[in-house]
Image (tube, rainbow, N blue to C red; front, side, top):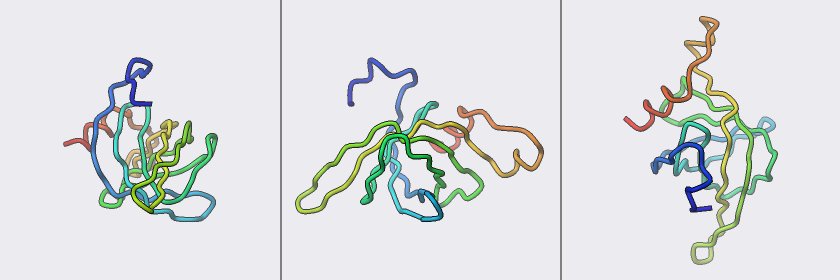
Length: 115
């Protein structure tokens, strides 16, 4: 999974606290990388491929990513078990743009997060 040869977009490493919304449940996670096509996350909760999720960045509450989990694997750090997974961004929702009837481009979202 670390092989970037098959990726359409370059990944940018980062570390941000996020909340994953799934079936009315709010699950804390850490966003560890981002690209124009998706994001990489780590959580204490497992997510199966195909799961639909909404992700909000904890300190930027006007953005949400709606996406689909594409892959997941278990990682262990000492006695603690975590799950690393990739989410394909189906859409990036910006409340301001939604109210005006438009939809933002992914690249603007990625640039804002990395600035």
